Length: 604
Image 1 (cartoon, one colour):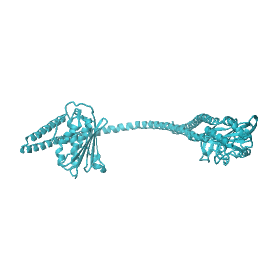
Image 2 (cartoon, rainbow, N blue to C red):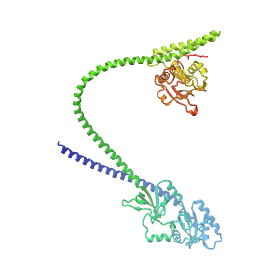
Image 3 (tube, rainbow, N blue to C red):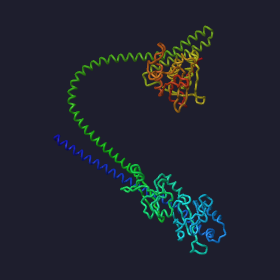
Image 4 (cartoon, helix red, strand yellow):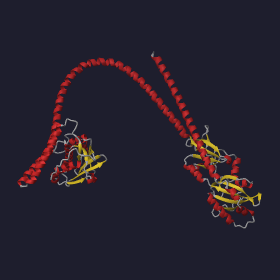
């Protein structure tokens, strides 16, 4: 295929793929938006039914009350003109009924709309003496019907729902002599709507919002009001002091925009009429989350398309690389043949050099092992020298019994040397046998071994050990390696305390779950940051020449690792006294029984 034809085919495929991607993304947008809108409408309808039911239930609690009170003789007689009962009695009766029923106010009007008695007669905003002949609920009552009306109180300025009933003359069921009205506050219901954090509002027959989950939307109109409707609202003084500004305006897609263009909120509205009241309950569904869901679906689809396109490009690139590799393979074969001759020559040279390096490595390993063995043997030998010298002085002084004790200790240390040598014979094996060892007993032995040095350096020793109920403290290991570990850590701490004016050594043993934690802390100069990085490296030491080979902590690290433990070193804060702090964690064996009796070395 010619190059020009191949390019035209590639452009055609690219154009078709682009068209397919755009069409699929548009379909995803439309499908997701339709689905989200349908789900939102279904949710809105169920919520509308709930809100409508709660509103009707709140109103029906009081619809019976005006007619019931209007039939009472006390109320009728108050309007008959020949009753001798004082008005205070009627006021008190209405106040009691209002308090028990939860109504905001109950009041009695004559046939001219003048209030003769009211439950709020003793309040600064009493209805008594006020005339409400212009209110629709009074007009309906004087026509012999039950009146229902929502308005802002012309006396109190508080909105409420008014229900009224006619009062008939005693003995004449056809003559209406007045009206009894009950005012119901719906503020608590509106507060419940607000706490539900949903956009709900209730509009009257003129489209004026009378209740809303957002107080700022109240007493605003959903649509235009003609001159006749405005005149009726003014004549009835329904919304005194409220300009009835528009809440928003409808857009071409039927959504409601509340607020200024570009910064307002858009809502899809779902409405449900409320029966005889000629009110409408509205549930507002925010448009932004619906479009956000559709946008996210498009982005996810675009990401899938992008992944597919990248995969296709990668496969195409892979095929090109494969062809390139095949071409290069032949070139490489020729180059390899030329190199084989040179490699054979270099191989002979490297074999000779490798033999020399192996020999040098053996010598270095032998030197490392010899230094480590010397370091470990030197510790008990130093004890033997000390006890031998002390025993000689005791014999010179005639203290044969004390000298015998020292010789017994020399025998014990000799046994340790023999045991250590046996351990070295097993060095090449997987590891020494593990058995329960009492860590506190080994610590006591090492402290006795180092007792002379502690006294010579005048070191204050502080022990933080478990109580008697928690003893012995068993760990998995063997006596020799645990003693080596303890001796190395304590000697290292004593070396750090040589130049300290008031040396202090703190040793702690604690149980943390299934592990035993050993801590060794001194108040020496601490460990420099650069030293911490190489502290457990072999042959690394900061001591003077002749004081050590730098193997103590290296060997300690190896012992802890072999016992499946952890060792860490850091510096104690200066506020707590400063110095180096070593923490060793070993697997505990609480409740274990030793395979053989613990050794009873004691030094005095």
